[in-house]
Length: 170
Image (tube, rainbow, N blue to C red; front, side):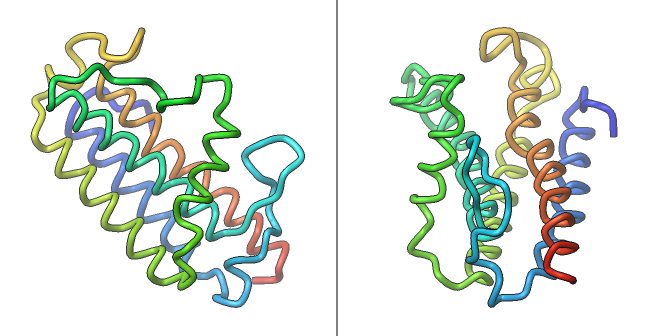
């Protein structure tokens, strides 16, 4: 799918990539979901399917947080307080830790779905011009920043999970 250039295309991309991802995530056996059998987000690390879901939730929550900061008149710290754009591997580790207490894979998947729905609701509150009419984070529009942290990671995660499923024989 091409890079979304409108509100409708953004919502379609998120929903399409999410639906494809969920089919793969649902095929992960519960007994394998928390085993670190995949290449991690930082060089030389491994992660579990559950950690990958935590990563996706983390980015989604971060997008929502940016908008909450903005709505309250605060300056947005990109990507996150205490992290720089060249430290995304460390940020991934933080996301893994943020959700490590959710030990039921189905509950984690429900949290991901809620997050996706919250993001769609956020997007629906914007016009095309709000999303794509001007820069928002450095050179990127608001819509592009949302896409880079939702539909693109969903697509990437789907590929990772597909490889994982082949590795474990599913």
